[in-house]
Amino acid sequence: MTVVTDVADLQALARRRVPKMFYQYADTGSWTQSTYRENEAALQRQKLRQRVARNIDNRSLKTTMVGQEVSMPVALAPVGLTGMQHADGEILAAQAAEEFGVPFTLSTMSVCSIEDVAENTKNPFWFQLYVMRDRGFSENLMQRATNAGCSALVLTLDLQVLGQRHQDIKNGLSTPPKPKPGVLIDLAFKPRWCWNMLQTKRHQFGNIHGHVSGVEDMTSLAEWTNSQFDPTLDWSSVEWVKKHWNRKLILKGINDVEDARIAADLGADAIVVSNHGGRQLDGALASYDVLADIVDAVGDKIEVHFDGGIRSGQDIFKAVATGAHSTYIGRAFIYGLGAMGKAGVTKVLEIMRKELDVTMGLCGETDITKVGRHNLVL
Ligand code: FNR
Image 1 (tube, rainbow, N blue to C red):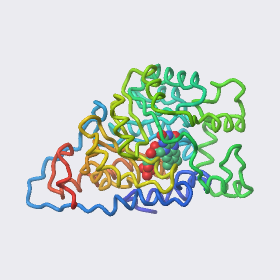
Image 2 (cartoon, rainbow, N blue to C red):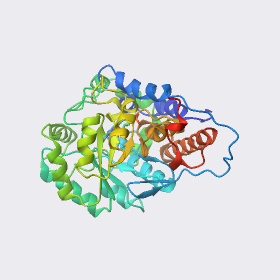
Image 3 (tube, rainbow, N blue to C red):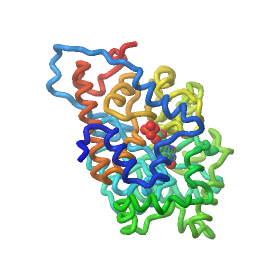
Image 4 (cartoon, protein in one colour):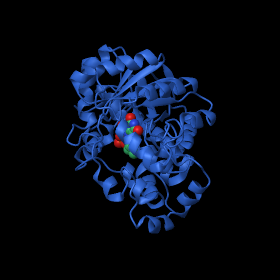
């Protein structure tokens, strides 16, 4: 029996339990994967200032994200096909996040639909939007998210075309899907995953399936979806979104100071410094390596959020100390989900909370909102 002490333990379990095709979909980046690796490496390079003999008895990790109270500065990032890591994955992750007091963000490319998640949770969650070529469809998605009570829209800007992910192509996770002959053998070694999948009817892109006429089977669904990412998206598309969404708006996928300035001037509630977890432009800077400059440029105008490479509470601390208002985790919660379903997501959040709390204390701080660059070795 593995004793789970950190996210890497859950990752190892997920690798054993999730079919290779879906595990590798999550655990890879685009092209040479250099940005994917750099995201983690950049955080690891940052050193912390150890402080002693300060009373650190009462510590608080509480803060806010776009005005919403959160138990620690973390949200679950939007992750497509979460429901393929574990049956009903989006619902389970949303429930775990809700119980923990952190936001869950549902991807446009989710398996469980907006309505599925709303029916199975009590509090508002967040919805991530890809602007599609079919603007009527995007408008309809925003309406559905409004009806479901979603309190924030995370508009992703860094996927106008899909970054090529070699491992997905090798695994047949392509458009149309071309499963490899070894898939059935692999599934024979993943009985827990198969059993759970047999218990649910949610196997498609739930936000799309049944909402576009003529798109019924898996192949047409994949083809339609793939053809819908919109290369014409520009800053005027953000204005267009704002006309159809009157709750909190978060712009995700900013990895450049000039873009951050433009985004801040558009009057959104927050930006997410992100390179899509190294899944889009391979060769782009690690998101942690641009964070400080972006905070310095726009941090007084807009809330700056951060994601990319966070695998521990220490990583969260480093991002917050650098100036991020809060963070998102992608793969970390996905590993927990693949390993142990909802309990695994809860476990990841518990691990991160503990690591963040101890790190903050050993840096001599008691309040996460007071953490800053003075805690870093610069
Ligand atoms: C993502 N990400 C993502 N982002 C988004 O806006 N919409 C999406 O549908 C997806 N889908 C997706 C799938 C998978 C498998 C991964 C790993 C990531 C990016 C995600 O929101 C986030 O930016 C990164 O995951 C952050 O990096 P880490 O925490 O995974 O290192």
